Length: 122
Image (cartoon, rainbow, N blue to C red; front, side, top):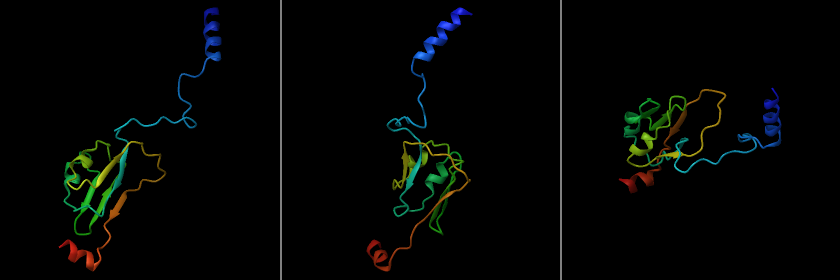
């Protein structure tokens, strides 16, 4: 019993072994897969390769509507979508997502191109 008192007083006098999380946040490691950070929808060609390669079916690509949808609650943050995209429209971030209050899907829709832009591209 007295042996335990020495251990208690030693721990009371030392600093904590863990990080004081809300006040002291750890910086993410370089190249860590934290979340799908962004989609450059303007560059997307809606080929659907990212959706086909996604192991958890978290991505839905609708070519007719020119829209792209990500379900972050299905996503397992493997990064296959970002690696397989031929236009490199998808980017992975190093920080993890914050807690969510509602289950919402991220939907990206390509804005319609102006008449002058279509002629220049074609």
